[in-house]
Length: 245
Image (cartoon, rainbow, N blue to C red; front, side, top):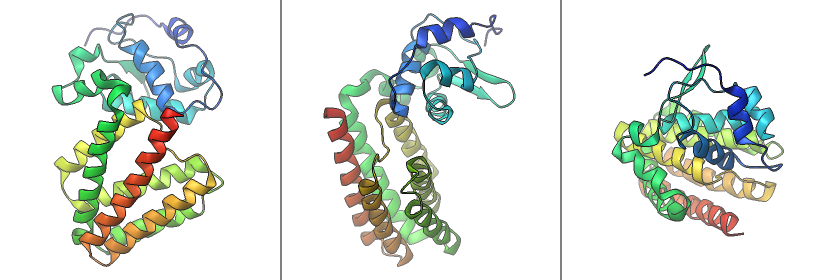
């Protein structure tokens, strides 16, 4: 890693520009991805702080934080607590082959990423139903309760939703499987907005998570997998409809 170049915050923020009001995390990530992999910024450059990026882009700090987290998974940036966020280098130099294809396909094959996510999430639910202990079930119950309490705060709803899926993955007990799923989620965060945007969809998603939870609680892998298949179909249809709308 080369020595960190002089501060280029002003240049970087000027290149990013302002995004429209209500821009989803996926678009924030794409805007930064385009700039950071374009070759105009040297590896090792320290990026502007989250607050400055949020102000420049015209979005909330949480959107910037989530976008940077996705780019860190992809190997584009290096987030160092207490120090800042640094550009690691060009995508072609940094990403292993298993991740590089994700940057190349971009939006064109979002549907393929979604199909892969569906299969992995369904398998995770099946494994979790046969392996979850009482502590995991309690976490899942708490996450669903948080979802139900967050219909008026969809950012909090999304966090509870993600925590539910993380707990399922932990229960599955297959690190290789969950690592692949984590990569797919991160790629989708860059290329597609996954969140629900209204109370009706949040209520539907909660009911679908309840069904998965019921299967896990009963130790019924078939029921948990079937419920997750229903949830994935709904989530995928919503996302594709939003992107084509």
